[in-house]
Length: 203
Length: 203
DNA sequence: AACTTTTTTAAACAATTGTTCAAATTTCGG
DNA sequence: CCGAAATTTGAACAATTGTTTAAAAAAGTT
Image (cartoon, rainbow over all chains, first blue to last red):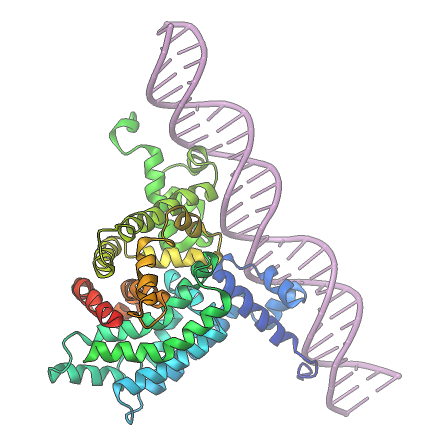
């Protein structure tokens, strides 16, 4: 039976935690199973014992990541009580929280889009992100003549304004254009700035 | 097959062209030297004969990419004849041109930032991108009290507004939110929209 | 033509890496 | 405590992969 829940951190969870770290930092192809075993400080074979293969383990980690990224946003974007700007503000705050906590996320996910096995699309479709109320509201606004640009522009802008800083962060910090703590400050400023900018784009 | 040297592109150039395709599509770690040889339709050993190693070959490809991305922008950002908005408009146009022609570029470069060997920083520093006139103008504006936010916000916004669509493109098209040709149209619209949005952010 | 040099090829090497296996060790119900 | 099941270990396998080598082929030179 399951005697694995007793250790302070079960072997399985230690492997998973290590996999999160290594996969996120190096991507799938550059990650060696031995790296994960070393990071978790467990025997190499245990990785295949608990998860059947490197690929299966990766899928778990990726699913987690995509889930975190898509699920909450999907909820926000489908809340019919909220206006476009209210949705945006909430989404921006959630993303900034999430990305401050997991700074390597964007690079990680983008890295996976490139290989294109594309767990992202699967999950994004599963949730109703691309037929969300947010999208519908934007199209409605366009119909009414109150929005001059294609709704997709707005969607891309929301994502771009939130995510790009995290993609650029390594470069910004390596070039000392922004210091470590200052980055956090700037991101917190953006919680208010981005909705403001979006308002300008809509009006 | 005799006397092939003069008729086609040189073997060296064929390898390079193949390397551009495969590296850009799959990233360094996921690319096999045999993939490149197959794509170039040449003998495996020739890759090591002309370029000394997979890594050396990659450096050439990466240097090209970064060069294309940084050099022109550096010139624009250091043109003292141009205002902030004029610089932005020019940069936006150049980037959109470049990225429409090389849609895989952003993913490719981002993919390399993650591994962090980081040829990007080396080249970006070599050119004066991070002490450019553009940056100085923004800081000056801030000093005068005519810009309420940190200049870095503006820089991140320019890049984010231009680049993000190309990162998101695979997802957008897989979900048929944007069709193939429509994407090009949207990007062309952004040539005018982004400077407009930036104006709003500055004013 | 005779030669030297450059380019190309096939094969193999050496290292890496995902995976498996059998034995050892630990855990746990009875 | 016993024995069965689960877990852990060390070793090895099998496939992949970057690189090298030596010989053949082609191109260039005198």
